[in-house]
Length: 227
Image (cartoon, rainbow, N blue to C red; front, side, top):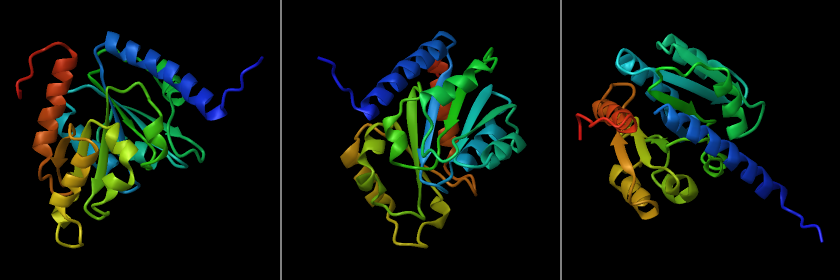
């Protein structure tokens, strides 16, 4: 008797196989891979722009910029100093998948790469289900959003390792409570590493830069200076 496999389950299974191959390839090259996820406008591109400008001379970064219709984010990252930036325009899909990432990586020379950033499509629902072969998901929200975001999108926060709260320079301009959003996030995932930053003023970013350099060192089997 032939078994019918639900389409969604089959798609995710195929995605996981490709993601595992990506992870193995990156591990062999000792490349740290981070999948950045957020709602639209939270500041993923701004965080990457700042990171490129500050660490561009110390880390060799490859960036994949996902978007629904444009290459605007990829162009911003190139202007910020990104030497190897590749766009993925999904044409309407609300997330990146491992097949899209594989196609890009197959065309890249990753020799000497320290870190691969994957900027996912702005969405806190669909990307939570798709493994892209990353070491960690980094979830961002901003203080212009609701502090109940972790409770509304628990799957994303449960599957993330890092939580970045952006636009702290705007605290007090809305009802957003910093302590409350951190407590909400802890209820979902008590192991999140949390950063409070402003990509506009630069406040709090030094801790992010140090963490990133430490993670790159760990990936290469080197004792981090910041730990």
